Image 1 (cartoon, rainbow, N blue to C red):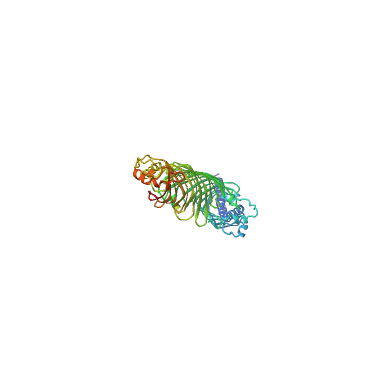
Image 2 (image 1 turned 90 degrees about the vertical axis):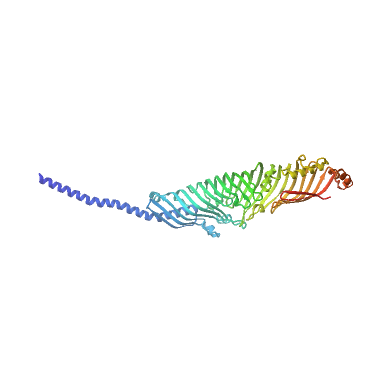
Length: 526
């Protein structure tokens, strides 16, 4: 019996030995084969993925695509990096003379699963892009280059999101008086990218003038390759802490919020702005300025058409319309019409003139045009204005000036018993038309009414130094002799009264008004 047991045990050990001699190589082979397969798959994944990227972009844009490098690494999962991506315009555009890449990418990278890379459609998560530049040909060239609609191939890749940092969008122009439109895109996130759907986005744009950052959230697309201006865009924006000091002649910190909708070449914007400390360099008196506006923006040229602006400066409301147009090599030209129905003259004087408090108070009605030429000069130097106005219930804040007006009114009425400072204040009215150029206001016609008479003037007022120079005439109800307090002087001037009596007025007297830095002098020319 022991012998039989020993034989069985020996046979069992031999069978076990044979099993392990086959099992160990089989296990090693089972491990090695998948590793080799994975290595082969990864080695092939780079060229395969590169081909799919190029194929996908060619299908989407219907144009030539070049990709310099694309590498796949499995050190930390499946990581893909690439660079030197260029998407060229369609053959028709190339033939028309536009040979720049429409889209170029310096570097990109993304993480993916092996199955997402191998199986179709290829699926990746978030693609991070650096050095993105989008160059859109001029509209006329795009029109010439697109005589027919192309049929795009089927897209072979799906991307969940693209994150772009420090990118640039340049929209070309064939107009000799305009520069290409350049948008600096500090940070942009595009999600759910598909060929025929709108792409949700979250973007931060750097605005150079006034300097600040615009944060916009909305949808963009689908992208119209042949006519980018027809691409849809919508969303909401915030523009905080925009520094108006970057515009020569202005100061203040602006904040704006709003929403927009339309196509890239016709975007309708509704928004609000708040500038609690708006000022001009002619006065440096901060004033609160708020606006609500509706505008149309041509994103392909940068031209903005202000359909309506309801503004409030201090306590005064007014309405504006106009346009901001890009001028080649110079910046922007601004044209605005402004209408004030019933404002406070002190608000506008405090904004524009250094005298504080404002030289006068009262109600103002104004209709004017305003033009600001492009260039490096201060806004107040470039500003051109033309219009007409009416001031009611005028009262001068300087007691000396108001005393002169009060005494003039008393003389004009022939009430000379109390011709001294402290006389009862009177309210007056002023109407006229004006133009402004190079910091100087010109008044072709001014008419000033006060109790007892009126004054007609024409002349100039220079903002720098507040220099007055006006000529005109004073018309009074009282005769010349009746405007004097001294009885014997009255008798002496009685004979000359007929020489000044004209057109039903007691006297018409030539005058000259001059002054500097708020000190006004009135001279009579008998």
